[in-house]
Image 1: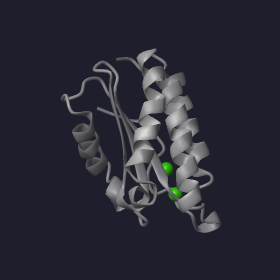
Image 2: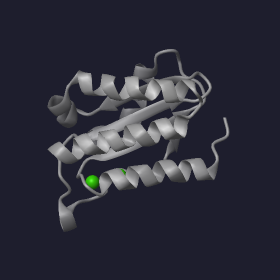
Image 3: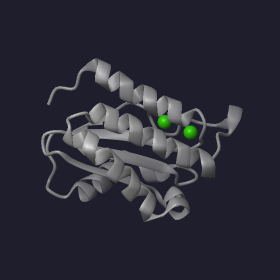
Image 4: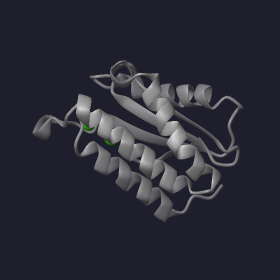
Length: 141
Ligand code: CA
Ligand code: CA
């Protein structure tokens, strides 16, 4: 599925905004089709992107298979311990209606903002010594 540059830019902007207030890292991975198990695909992408290598284990991945209409959100151990499964479920439940309506960019903007708020609460931005540990670009495939 074709993703317009403008759509990608909006997602990157949402990630940048989220990361301005936290040391945590947010990534978005887009796929056309999913193997059937979005969570498993998300876990694979998480590893492939090296998202388990952040210092505080506070990376969050949004995985979306555009043609399969499958979606998963996954947080590394550091943030997962703080927020628990209910937090991911809450983000997912809030995003589903938007995704179903085809507003996937809006859904991701919302999810990324929510993830950023939780990260900021538990992993505040480290000022000048904060590093962008993971690229803010949308990854594909
Ligand atoms: Ca960072
Ligand atoms: Ca980043």
